[in-house]
Length: 443
Image (tube, rainbow, N blue to C red; front, side, top):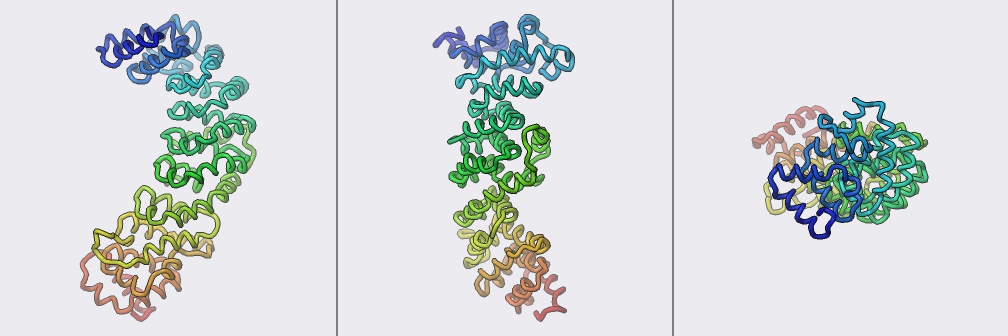
């Protein structure tokens, strides 16, 4: 019935609406025929539904076991839940199992079949245990067909293995297969991991720029609005930074660090990529500053672009500063100023505080200076009318740069009496800071 163009829908109804014993009976009926069913145009959908949505861990393994060899088709191992566990108990069968898996997987390299998560799982298990020649042969067979697999965790991990252990030729072919799909891969829940692995391993950064980065630049705004797409952009700016990438992900990425085909120094590879992405990323802030600085989801990306990009960030900083230079009305809910806006305030805070590191690094452009040059007379004093505005002024003073401090102090002349009347915390702390500076400056 599963092979029938129409009867397969009845089998699916058994799985979806049938009681548990019926579901179990349907799954059990596949035993002995799983490899044939997975390759069948109609039946593969039924097996995929059973595996993905209704089989428990033991039942899933019983379906996968038929790819491990004939003996596992006839004699099931109900107490074992994964291939890892099976190989731990029977390590002497590893070569036989992998050889059988390779033979079975080569018959599954078809566009319609490669979309199934069950197939992705088998490929992932194979690459996790295969070595050298066997792995290389499989990469050569599948390297043009990875895109349909990358929407699942196992499929993305398979793509990562192919990039880690593929030769330069394999990697080039894989990248070419990504053409016209890069933006979609960036935004995929799991697919983006393959792009990160690509940035980690491919030595030919010019080719990466031509095939991958150019497509990213064309869809930059769309990618930046997606939570997974932002991770790709963040990785190009500050790879493996623990502020943005969880330890579990970094641990996975480290698996590919000692691959035999990446010869270029890792730091140099990252720098070459950063050099290519910096100009368009900085221009992106210039073109979309308002949307970015007033959006919580984009806040970290803006900070990373301004903090890590190579080249002159002046224009991008000025685009943010011009938003801060707009007239300020304390407590306005209709047109909330960047100083009072939750995301906008955090953007200003981190950009100003980062200036201390810029000074130590000898960087010529400071955000605080760009901001103060852009603001109109009286702007700083008006910010002192709200709590977040007072904290922003405090951050400027804490940069501890003579020119910045002089400018802020001169703009706040005569404000201490007003601050004394205010009850919010920011005003009190700012007043304490001004009192501490009173010996050096006339306030």
